[in-house]
Length: 458
Image (cartoon, rainbow, N blue to C red; front, side, top):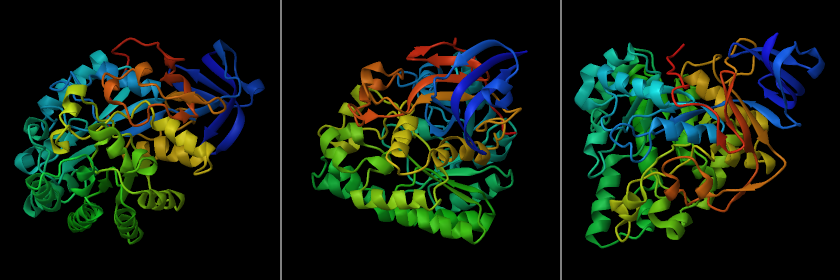
């Protein structure tokens, strides 16, 4: 006797796609196969032909709690994750303070245990001003590190303590320390000299309308930073995870380094595949993100990188802020923070791309679930539909379109979710199951805060 059987589903696993059923016992996957091969179950769910995927593993999420709890906490953030089919999130530090020490990390772990409804893993902060903390925090259960090459944005210095490597010395020493732990370093690749210089220039000239955000962070800033990061990682034998890459040239640089044997992984985001810089003219600061949105030509070339298998993961880079914070971008775009919500739309956006034949559904599962779990040491507990794996499952409707409505979102920052408003998408999340328990069903949260678990690297 098992606890649950889900039958009549189109199951997408690493072994292929088949019509059948899945059995769950004690929070683990107990069997996969034909409907008539399943053991007796306490409960049976009729999937009605919906697609059954491994629960999403979002490799790039910012929650903000505790210092930015007005933007997002682990309850609202994991509500959003569940609504978007993510059963695991990997949280990146920009949290005031970032988790550069064990004490800060464990404070946030306790918040997960009290607030979350999906499972959460953490990256630790790695920065030049806290070099002596880099190795010790690895022993506390992080799954990797996060660092920035650019300075903290004005007014947000407390959110970036121990999180920036401001020069080549700090980058070299920081990578040396991280490499000794064997954990990957997730790096934000934008050249600080180029970006800070252009922002100062444009402000002095009164060029502060939204499009100048994109102009202040040109493609060359990303390419230069990727070149530098690859060189330092190679020199120190560090494993490099390049976050939210938006420029095809940067992707190909990293892919070539990997071909030559370097340990490097490449992440992009839905907005670098779907949104152009024209959104800045339309939505102003609500379309501001770092790196900025690019041109239609660059988007087309990014899809070519996806098709060639050069991209490893797609993260939401969920960046919650308040309306008041975003409104500071009028009339000075540089005064607004960068980022917008993405947890609730990451999966439907990419499944809509599947519907449009831009990629296969199996490739989407690799990018959204399997590969992130492998890179950050969570596989096969997470990101897999196989016997013995956690029963993390999402059922999606690939046939009936739905319209994105920010008022129906569950994240605390839904008020700034402008860029996809009104889009017609496929892949509506019908049900999200975490370790055998339904946490989200047809627009309703089904789990209490505290059900989510803190994940350490396997």
